Image 1: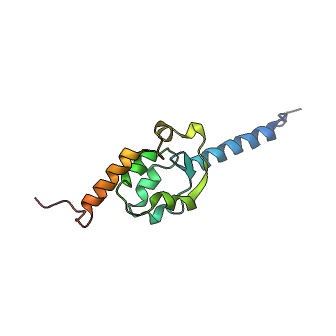
Image 2: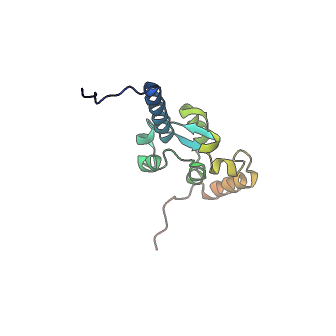
Image 3: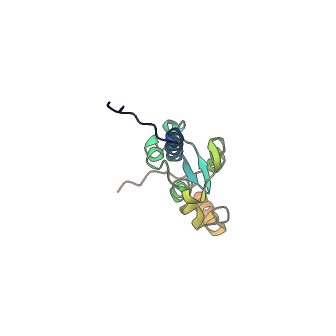
Length: 131
């Protein structure tokens, strides 16, 4: 008598469930952006980003704190407050690299420098001068 091609494997459904959960977790992490130690889901907002969706899409699943800080250093808009509506949860330690390097909430010299540059550039064109 021939054996069936399908064999019972004890715990198989538990294993499949575990694998599915892990895949789901990986997908969720890849759709999060880590900024200053927090995880944000910018998926729905990416197409509205003034700097284009490309940078948002390229940084998905990463700790993009330094990129966020440098791109928005001279912004007069409250970009940090704008993130609040996209907050998902505090980032897990293993998701952070740049976020953990610096105390981003306490950068008085950098903050003062940004304000001085903003004041200096106030009312000036943001376009490069013609040569």
